Each structure stands twice: as structure tokens, then as C-alpha cells.
Amino acid sequence: MKKLISSLMFSGLLFVSCSEAQHSNTTNEVKSTETSTASPQEKTVITKVLPANEFQALIGKEGYQLVDVRTPQEYNAGKIGDAKNINFFDPDFKTQIAQLDMSKPVLIYCASGNRSGKATLIMKEMGFTEIYDLRGGYGSWPFK
Image (cartoon, rainbow, N blue to C red; front, side, top):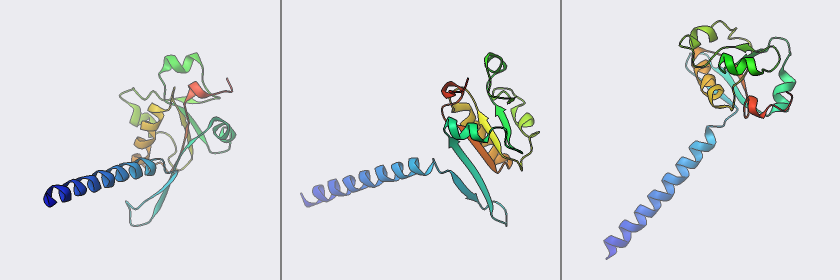
């Protein structure tokens, strides 16, 4: 009987522990700034998901690159400012993204935030150091 009670208590502790670990992992995924030590020198990579008003405040600032990763059809139906269209689904996506200046900040958006979030991960791997993603994508853009 003691073994059964001990086993149940251990299982309960393990469940709570795993639940907490999953919760903290979820929380950590929304970091706005992270430091990568892939090279001998520390490199700071900034990735932020911004609400529309903060995103809009950065548009047009010197050095910022505005990128729309929706399809050409979506882009032609409406876009933000003078955004450059680089279709996330294009087989040549990485090559086109690589033509941007990796040392300058990038403002990125898609229709809902899904593709731009995936594009952000790709861009971080490629060496981009400052990426701002529009929360909710073009669908949430109030300044149309």
C-alpha cells in the first residue's frame, strides 16, 4: 500500500513538474530580445512582435526595410506603405530575403502573423539582427 501511495505521489509531482516546464517554455518563446552565442563574440538579436501603432511608428524611419511576405495576389489587394513583396511560399524565398541588408532593421508582416513569424525564424538563422513583426498581420492593420 505504501508503494502505491508513493508511486501516485511521484506521478503527481512529475505531472505538475512537466506542466510547469511546458508553461515556462511557452512563456520563454515570446521573448522580445535574445542573445545568440553562435560566434566567439556575443551577438544580440532583436525580434519583437509589435502592435499596429508601434509598427506604424517605425515605418519610414531611415534604414528600416518594410517587407510583406504574403502572396502577390494578397499584396496587390492592399499593402502597407511601400512594402517590398517577398512571397513566403516562393521556392526562392531565402534567396530573395538574402538580398535585404542584414545589418538594417526589418519590419515584416503577412496576413495574420503566421507566415511572418516563420519568416522571422528563417531570417534569424540567416543572420538578421533586428526584426519587427506586425502582431495580427495585415488583417489587424487599422490604417488601411
